[in-house]
Each structure stands twice: as structure tokens, then as C-alpha cells.
Length: 159
Image 1 (cartoon, helix red, strand yellow):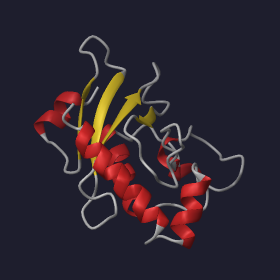
Image 2 (image 1 turned 30 degrees about the horizontal axis):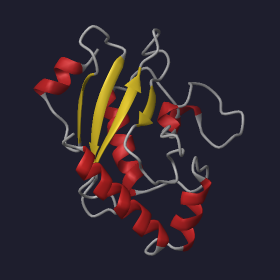
Image 3 (image 1 turned 90 degrees about the horizontal axis):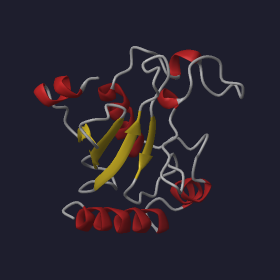
């Protein structure tokens, strides 16, 4: 896949590697909380699981580190357009070009995830509670929960 390319030209904001050198379909990534956001200073581990028919279909991304965010389900699944199966959205929220396209790479996925951390999409939340807090009390309850996740992620980063 694109691992050697990423190692040669690292992208700011995340690091990526194989979970196991014998399996190119399982990646571990660490997303570094973007500066000037509530997630700044965090080290959020996630897995990227690629389907056998990649790049025709998108990988699945799941945070292992606890993260409180409107677009991340409580089980860690990342819910953003770019990772949705290609084609028409049966709910009509997303245009086909916003969804998965075979031209996407780990780099474009990670850039989307980093921008999602900085700028949540409250329209189709994966975590309804986080979305509600983000809308109603972004500098109160929401900020506190995110800060707790950031602290925990820093402690876990060196395990």
C-alpha cells in the first residue's frame, strides 16, 4: 500500500504503520490533536482496516484511544463522508463526490480526520450526546470531556 511513501514523506499531524508486518490490510495510526483545537496535545490511536478490494472500497477507521467527538461513535468508529461506501447516499445528505473515491489515500483520509477534529459536523452525528454538548455547551461540559480524553491519551501514548 502506501506505507513506504508515507515514511519517506511524513504528513504533519499523524503517524502510521502496520500493526503486523505480515498483514498489509491492518494499520495503526496515531492522530496528533491539531493545534488550536480542544484536542491539541492528544495522541489518539486508531486502526485502519482495509478491505481486500481496496482502493475500490474504503477502509474502516476505529479509534482505540477514547475520544469524545460528534463524528466518532462511542465504540470508536469514525463516521465521515470520505469513509462511506462509494455512490449515492440513500439519505441524500452527501454528494457522491464527498464519499469514498479510489483516488483517496491514507494521507487524504487522515487529513479529513484531522480537519474533522478541528471542525465537527453536527448534521449527522455518530455520537449524539457529544454533538448535543458540542452545540449547546462547547466550552463547558464538551470541553471538559475532551480534555479528559486528551489527558488519558497522553498517559497511554507511552504504554
